[in-house]
Amino acid sequence: MKIDSVDLFYLKIPRVKNIGDGSQDALLVRVRAGNFEGWGECEASPLVTIAAWNCPTSHSACQPVSASVLGQSIDTPADIKRIHTNVKANSLDLLQTDHLLSGIDIALWDLLGRKLEEPVYQLLGYPTAHPKTAYASVLFGDSPAETFQKAENAQQQGYRAVKFGWGCYGRQSPAADADQVAAAREGLGKDRCLLIDAGTLWVDDPTEAEKRLSSLETQRVLWLEEPFVSGALNAYRKLSSMTTVKLAGGEGCHDFHQARHMIDHGGIGFIQIDAGRIGGLSIAKQVADYAATRKVKYVNHTFTTQLALSASLQPYAGLSEHDLCEYPVEASALAQSLTPLLIKLDAEGHVHLPETPGLGITPISETIRKYLTETEIVVNGKVIYQTPTI
Image (cartoon, rainbow, N blue to C red; front, side, top):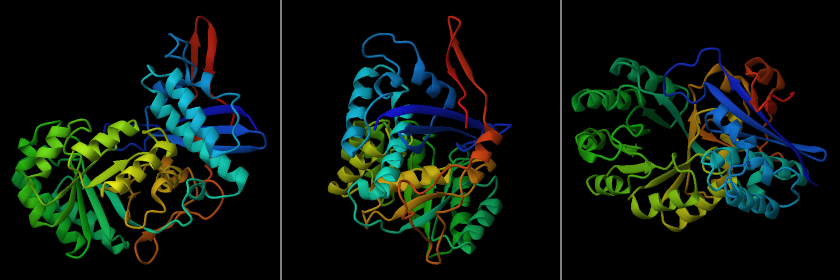
């Protein structure tokens, strides 16, 4: 069976706001081979990622990703590994490669699972998919009162963990930030898990982060997420030595080596991987395996759709001790309506992967049509990309 086509669909809500919400647009990938198709999603800027698919060749290590994918055999997991190797070699200097390859890789695993009639997690080598404790991933409110209400709503909905991030946190005084964290704890209750996300605000300087450690420790926060950018290993390591609060990071990693450096040299307790950025399920699984050997817990990064959520859970589905799962609850109408709601919170606050072939989730065609952004790329009068038919 050979890859007949790879189609890229750029979706977008009518008005994209300048806020920390990555669900306002989406790039879906559909791969077809023989009588089968699979779906994936890139966590990336759609237009620049589309360009990486069919951009003109610059030199031997800067070819379009399409050159290494179309026409390739896809019958076993070994074929996905081979395609990965070829793409990484032939598009080495094309910096959008990993984002695009992520969506293609996810779609290939989905397609192969459908063909072989197995869930993806089994193809990845896990006999069982363990339930994960979902944490509601929400933005800080504009005030402590609003944050309190969000936390209270989340615990009333059955979430046993909640993560607050971005918004005003870190942009105001340490005392004001402490009030926000205290409001989150009060609304959530004393027995549930509270997580805080600083959104890389302090880049590589631990000074401001250090001022907030006392309030995080007082409110028994499990982790402080992304106080710095992913490559700021010295800052991560220094801050981790100052506190009992674990550090989490890694969603900005674009390949296995970046994630490994975070684990080995950053002093983190949790490695957060976005399967739609790092190179897909193939690389995410590699990170999960390595994290387990280093006693660092693997967590998914997902803030968009149920398709992305299913994909993000597959690489660590069989790791029972790695039991937290980011669950998007404030996604846009696009993200909420793109697929059926199949991964739901159960009475214990857990989520479970579908036990159906592939990822178990297929985008709804009507939603794709509703949010589809017609796009055409022309080079020297020749159309090299045009929105495909759904």
